[in-house]
Figure 1 (spheres, rainbow, N blue to C red):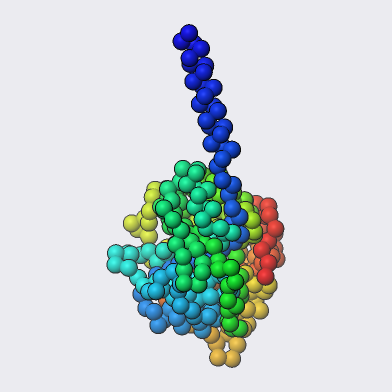
Figure 2 (cartoon, one colour):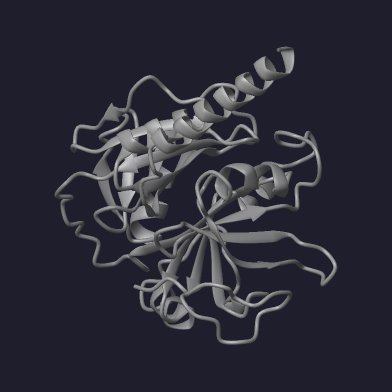
Amino acid sequence: MQTRSIVAALVAACAVTAAAAQTAPPRPKITGISHLAVYSSDAAATEHYYTVIVGAAKLPDPENPQGVRYALSATQFIEVLPLPAGAGVNRLDHIAWNVESADKMRKYLAAKGWKTPARVERGADGSRWFEVRDPEGNKVQFVEPPAHPKAVDAPNAIGHHIIHVGCMVHDRALEDTFYRDLLGFRPYWWGGMKPDKVDWVSQQVPDGHDWLEYMLSAGPGKGIPETMTQRELGVLDHFSIGVASVPDVYKVLVAAGNRLDGRHDAAPKIGRDGKYQFNLYDPDGIRTEVMNFHATDKPCCSAFTAEDPAE
């Protein structure tokens, strides 16, 4: 009799589990990068960098009245927020992904057991979003753009497509439980400064070609290492603007009137992934990487395993 009770209990438990799996909502599409949100200690200097050098359009921030958006397109921008007390060397607030439905994404994550807010927020522009933490505590937003986003007037922008964002990551396997297992991000490329060490892992969104780059050079542990400087952290926490030709963009930047000032590379170079790139840094050290959509040389370390993003 006892055996029959145990079997019946197991059958009932399996039935409940199967029913829960069948009723779990499907993951809504994650189509690409929405924005990177950073802190500024000098609003005027930051405005000069993003409007004059990068060429973005300055707009009000529908999410945060204290913030400013520097937009490259109707759905991609850099959000700049005032530097909070106690930030230390950190200048990154969050990364954000565009999704087809913020509410459905919130419900999907909640059904999978991820800690989510009770509701989504609504911006003054009609956008909807919510925020969670990834396994290492980094803030991640999911943004549903407005139904009819307004066109952005940024004729001097060095590019109009943010193709990837990168942030410091300690534990690749731990982060994969969120980005790959839960969200469905797909491998794109990995590499390192040396053949026997992985420093960067690129993974594309499941429903587009923009990607997240794990910056693994911080080593083991959690949080920002005590010895890490603001300059070093700014190299890791970055965003990349895709272009057809980095050398051509560089020529525009150094043409009559020379838009370049502050900290930047001496000239374009070909990175370990075989793509031309050129690095610039905002006044607080966040890196802007201008990168070719397609590789010119053979990449080191691994082959590309998905299609490149495009204009």
